[in-house]
Image (tube, rainbow, N blue to C red; front, top):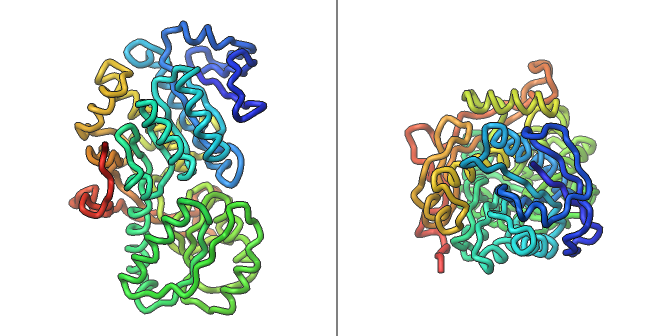
Length: 424
């Protein structure tokens, strides 16, 4: 069962307000209005809190996240739940860092959630992590990528599923190096002005300079910005060898579309791009090399089954944030089943054994015990030639998994010596 809540006020803590309850597979299609909070608290369901941006520049990605986690809830409940208990999912719009923290605290206090999951915005994830630590409760951070969250700001109550900035930069950088687009090249960067963008720009500049490139410009761009013409004029004047974007959410889509309209011919690559943004940009506007954590063409039984089920349910191909939320809930369910518990300390202890999880990729993933980062494969993608694909979802072509099968999964991740993470 899932509960979608859209509060009239982002800090409304009134437990008697009306809600819309959307049932999962156990009560397919059923709707109930005005279900009081006290009834849920008396049930034997496992209540999981889910926060993700559903508005703002990351809102479109949050929509995919909700679809993915809801589908996982329905599958788990239809299979009998976790240790015989059904899941109830409470999903809310995180809005911004302050509101995200307020909602996280409310879910722990009022809704008595067993665990908290979700988020995409790194700045919001940082505030939720603080709430989780203060309450000594588990937060599985599914989509944020900032290295800062895994470094000095880490805590033992948070686990990170998505690949971090350093892995994205190293994966993308290797692809750019193979194309001869780093060494000796002049690179102009565009960076989203928030925690993730700053973190990404720092890591990208480090990689570029370490491998013989030069960053000749780096523009900080407000996350609310939609007009890139002033920056495109600067790029035209600078005449770089490569344009590198450190943008997030729909900013990437807006930029590549406007770049195409300007008729510029400099190669474009990015250290961050979600497949939904690539699809929104369209084949005629997108080029270059980009990193990703998963894609629907991965040739494994798990990915094939997930994609088929998602298409049947939603009528479209899943994006990587749908996959992230789907596998994250399956990971959480495995931990609860193995420990026969929802107790925070028992779940943390299980994850810290570095147990293996099926991520629908060729290799199993695991959380590193000392920084709680999921170790897994990454990919890069480019754009297929016009006329070589049939569906609008399929104009991207993906690399083989990185690292190679004979290399350790943590090859591209910060080492323990490089990371400032220490649990108190």
